[in-house]
Structures are given as structure tokens and as C-alpha cells.
Amino acid sequence: MRVLVVSTSYPRLSDDWRGRFIADLVAALPAEDMNVRLWAPPGPLPADVAAATTIEERDWLDSLAEAGGIASRLRAGPLAALPAAFGLLRRLRRAYRRETFDVAHVNWLQNAIPLLGTRHAALVGVLGSDFGLLRLPGMAALLKSVLAGRRAILAPNAPWMAPRLQALFGEVATVRTLPFGVAPEWFSIERRPQSQGAPWLAVTRVTKAKIGALFEWGAGLFDARRPLVLLGPMQEDLSLPSWVDYRGATHPQALRNEWLPQAAGLITLSRHDEGRPQVMIEAMAAGLPIIASDLPAHSDLVDDASGRLVSSREALASALDDLSGQPGNASAGGAARDKARREIGDWRQAAARFRAAYRELLA
Image (cartoon, rainbow, N blue to C red):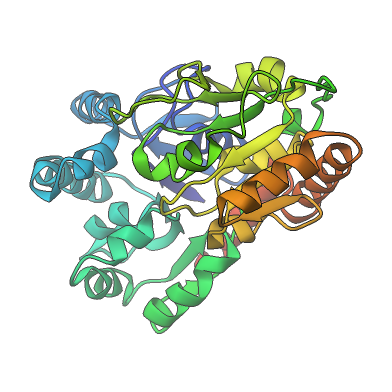
């Protein structure tokens, strides 16, 4: 079985934060009856996975990734994103016609558009940001045309996305939730937070939508006794409050070895189109309580046992008081780890789910 995996995000180096979940998936996918090729920005590949990009495509994707991808262009306005969008679609169209494969595993709906006019079986991974794409006029109809007449599975990585996708595309594709996994190393983290002064972590790209109400509601709730450490790349020019301890971009190894073991918990008040945030799943696997804004992507993961969903400053203050000290912190952290192990599992289990879907498409 020949599988072409397509992604516009991939870590350039082993300690890069970008596209880490794609690298973990690709490393777990190969099996004895499979040949896996990857069309993605350049980066270290597993020994049993081959690159499907030409030199020109690799360099172009690398430049796009360094500029923040299509999403960063969209933040500057639709017109600013058009050249990159057309460049991506044109190169993907060539790749789909050049490559020989049985199944296309396409991450992000936008990358499925150039399949139009082909008959390849396709598994299309759907993330939360894809729902922004679906709001564009005519986009759902275009994607329905892409999926019609081929064997196709739409695979959201969280259950809350499935009903909307079923309503839009159920006539032309099977909709099945296929959760991403977690590297086993996250489950083996031993927490050692200090009883006093353990930091709460916000691990996110620094944009207005990703930060959400954190700076507004957090004023007066975080200080030296209850610090807030912000980790992530600065992608918009935001003014950071003096009480925020900003440490810049991070990477998985630093999170596992340095930050998560000492943290009181993870906090995200994002208003972004989230699917199922991978950093949240990894923090849960590490045994951290979660405080999150009340979005579908967060309520799908967080309950009163594993953390708190908050929709006001008062609710945030109450959640911090409940979860910052023992025994509430240990209890919620244990429940978060159990939930991640039970409902999500590791990347080997996730890869088995995807391989089963490929075989179904080809049956």
C-alpha cells in the first residue's frame, strides 16, 4: 500500500515546535505492507519514509513555513494570502499528478483542493483551523466537488467537529473522528511542582486570538507567588503585561524536561479556531491540570475532574484558587493523565487507527 502524506507544516530540526504532530504521526505510520512518502517542508525524516517534494517545492515550502505559513498571510488580509495560496495549490496539483500512490493522507482541507479532477482515495485530516476555511463563500461546495466520486474519509481529530462535517459532506464522504496520539514520553513525566510559587504555563503562539482574555483577566491574579510563564513564538506585535514572564519560543524537549515537571498547570484562554490542541493533550498526559476557555475544542477534553472551563475573570480566579494547591492540583492532574491515556493514547495507537482507515478505503 502506497501512502502519500501531505502537510504544509513540519519541524525543520528535531527541537522545532512547528508541525511536531505531523512528524510524530509520520514516524509511527510505516508498517510492513506500506510505503510512505511525505510532501511537506524539509526536515529530518524517519529512515522508512521518503520525501515526495522536488527541490523547488522543498525550498518554496521552507520559505512559506519560515514566514509563518498561510495563516500568517491571512492575518495580513486575504489579498496578501492569495499569492501563497495559489502557489501552494499549483505545486500540490503537480505533486498529486506526479506521484504514484494508493491513498492520499491530506492534512488540512485546503490541501485537498488540488485533488479535484483525480480519482485517488483520500483520507483528509480536519483540524480546527479548517472551520475558518469553511466559512469562506463557496468553499464547502468546492470541497464537496473534490470529494464526490472518490473513496474518501474526512477525519477530524476531535468529536465535536464531526456533526458539522457530516452535515456538509456526509453525502460524499465518510466522516470519522481519528484522534492524534501522544508520544509515550509525555506519560512518563514525573511532576515535582513546588507547593508555593509553581508557575502556571501558557504555551501558545502569541497572537491576539490565541491569547484571548488571558492578559485582561489575569491582571491581579498572577504575581511572584503565582507566576504565569508564557512560552511560544511572537507572531503578532502584542504588548505584554509586566506580570507575564515571557520566555519566547520553546520545543517539546524543553517542555518535557524543564517546564512541565515544575508547573502547577496549563492555562489557555484562546479564542482561536481550535480543533484539539496538541499541547493541551501533552500537558494532560504529563499529569497537569488544565484551565481553559469554554470552547468546543476545550470542553471536549477538560471536565471538572481534570481542570476547569472558564468564561469570566471570576471563574478564572476560582479555578486558580482550587487548582494551585494540594490536594486539588494532584487530583486534577491524575484525572487529566488518566483521561489522556484512556481516550487518546500514544502515537502507535493513533497510527493503527489511520492504517485501518487506509485499508477500508482500499477494500
